Length: 89
Image (cartoon, rainbow, N blue to C red; front, side):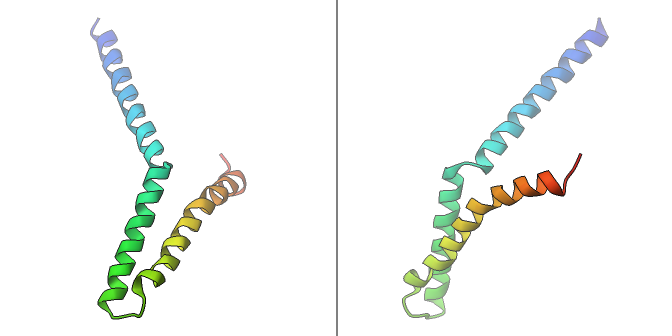
């Protein structure tokens, strides 16, 4: 009976881990996360450009934020290609 209980505990742990992994994956691919990263990138660059006295820092901060947004949109495409051609099981 102890072996069965041990197996049940292990299955429960695996299911809990799978739930954590699935929620992490959902967060990593969520638009909320991407939006927050774009906003934080914009703010960080804007404050930095303002601190070093660049003209129109908030306008100039748009470029890195947009570049980040474009990179997050294209990375899934490259991931699929990499999985298909480079990472062969």
